Figure: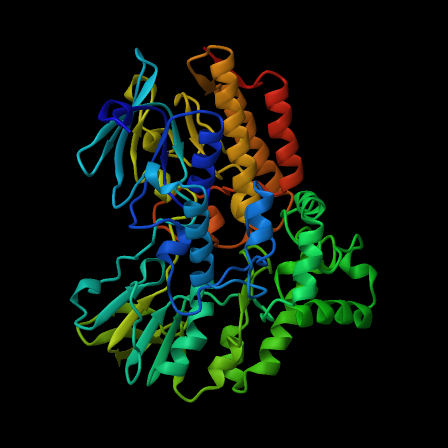
Length: 546
């Protein structure tokens, strides 16, 4: 490709994870000239950066894969029910090589700035490598969970030992043998990593702010008969999944159309137990009102808390691990012997209610010691550590997009436009930013679904939209403020009908100090996909096309 062609193209895609790879392939198929910029040294996105021990997908392998190529889905062989990070990364690399995608990807390069030129109707994109590219469309494929959150604990940089973040894990194996570790956080990454780290370390101290619900994954090798069955009906299997509320799970236990309290306690316990034994994210499909009714939800929460108490031998530790919030207001975690890990003699659990972190010291972590009844300070304790693992999650859904200095019409920045929370139309676009598209952006189902299905739906919509602009000889497409405001109201109204906004989750941005508290994803994939299709069929209703 000539330097002139590289400096001007139809579309720039930011990110070479699953969104960016598919977007590049779709653009090429439509005859567009596209460039992809990727901060990492390879493809994979989330699965390139998250290499911590035990990293694994919580969507079943036969569903967590592309459907755009039948040959691809027939030839690729998954080995486990829930694929591990190394296997998923190999899959991403296979896709990139199979479709010759890497020749249009510039690695080890961050997009720092993007400004819309109103006169030329083009985006001007600047990278940290000093390159400037002009493009008709700017497509953010930066991922929902890719901007690592590293809280500013007092004294964090004074620690003399080794530090790691689960979302930015070293590529080489980290040996924890004979070391004293502290892991801060007990979200999904920590729940996967803790059992493996505990088995290797001399001692592990877990610092927990909030207890989390976790369901056994029941992971294991995929049976060949099951794989053959899925591959023999992949189109129908994919179609059924797209009709599921979260775009996965049509092959598992069927969702119940009954309310939880309609069953007697014995029958309800048996239904929960069946799903617990099967493992996976289908647990909340036991009844149709578990995220709508607090009384119904409490029956599921009580079941999980009882399993924790059955598993953890020390009653006090078990109680510390029992969540007291709604089950499902945060994405449920999947684990392999997570709660059993707290029966190990080399594992200690400290919780923020009685042992909040005061600061990090050169030798470890200093915690306050609070009275469990009154909350009054009774002293302090320093935990000596050789390594600290920050399992503190991400600035979800908006962090990576806002990590690029994006300015639209009249020079207004996206950071300013989103100062009170993300504003989008369909989770795809923002008013005042023509030809700027976001794959699985805030206001779309994204993190509440099988991400691959949501990615494919967005990629196809964006691809179709750009083809429409070309066919009709149009320069720009831009959401109206009215359509955007109505959409934001709709997203919040849907969430408000459920229990999901009731806890301090990253769905609301509550893990990031100062971040606006807005419920970001839309609940329900099928009606969302129908709405996107309807908008396009109605001549891109809610948009201005120039």
